[in-house]
Length: 268
Image 1 (cartoon, rainbow, N blue to C red):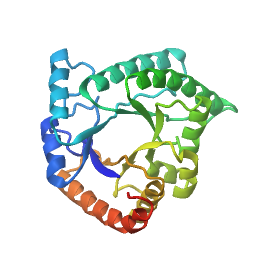
Image 2: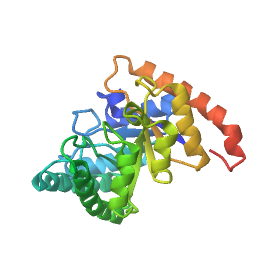
Image 3: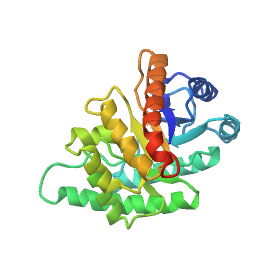
């Protein structure tokens, strides 16, 4: 398992600065949030030359750019909304493939809370669009990671993936704090997404998700030999250095506690 941080921790930094910062603080990955005017410049409107430069920077950076995380979602009520999001996601797939990023985050929330059957209809619509998007992503060697976010819990992610017929390129970004806030404890949530997790968001500053709970999340994933990233998501903090130092120290402590048991299974 590896540690990353999102560009939202250091929103003004350029891509080279983000990669250098990751190396300096002992992080193995950086995650980019487009659409928020961050300094990294990896956006849909980047020119062909900018994309080539970005690909070179990433290839030579010594740190993986582990995920591109736009705000794409397919929970809109109208087909026109979902069609527009599908077009946008396909453009992000092309962008990610060009610059060398192998995961793209997508949202599944907000789920409707209204008349009978409206949530089922949302599941079905999201599944249909995500299946189409995952097919295109798979051809480019990219995984879509569906985030447990807002009222979209692990059980909801599992329902959507089931209805989509479990596409190979459709995985889960397990953001545990959102599950906890909506009534799923860590073990219950993991039962729904076991074997499908390809990315994790976390923060030691979130309500509900304290260090012990995140430790349990890491233990569950380590037991299944998860080798992806735990990515720190803190949005525009006043002191980014404090955030990176705090999470790196906590991460080392957690890995140290997990390692003895994991070594008996073949490593973390």
